[in-house]
Image (cartoon, rainbow, N blue to C red; front, top):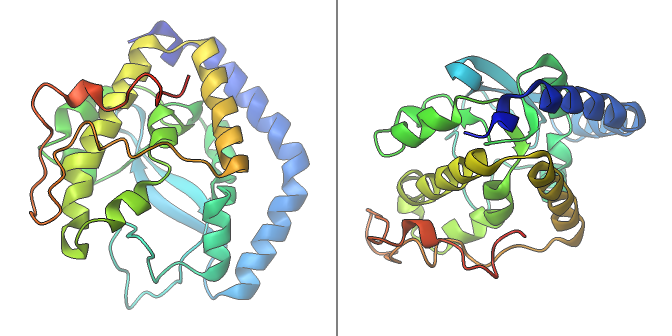
Length: 246
């Protein structure tokens, strides 16, 4: 793992960057909070238990984008066209505005700007991803990463497969590839790579562009079957050179 991933310099840049962004964003975040409160019942913030560095659990903060119904909690897995998402929530998710409260996670030391996305607490214990998950849990999770960029169209990918198989496909096909991308980042991480990922994240969000389906070269397409396995000897070839976020 690159020394940059756990360096004091990276942490100081995270803190300075979070403070620098929060000062101008606070009035806008207050308006979003008011809009969330006025358009649907429930709390302004969504708090979900995630597993972070050294397997320590923390609550990730987001603006709430789903209906708040205790009688029907639903799956922690967000499906394509999920009916639990509010109209305002779809707008917030499209432009990644719901992620803004994670700046407070950075200040608290739970997260970094760039790093593996924090894992939902039960999922990292799945046998098919446990080994890779153990590696990414050695560093602070991030708001964005190469895996986040490459799977921006994740819901559209899942929508191509039968509804009853989508959650299994996510755990057995998408998650292993995302974790492999995260491990590749950890191996080569530097200030330059973090700067590139942040810049590309901003550009992708503003432009609304997405990468071609990253699964095409890493997964045998089999939407009829409930079981998805990586194609032998192709797992590391999930993106061509042209598709990579360089």
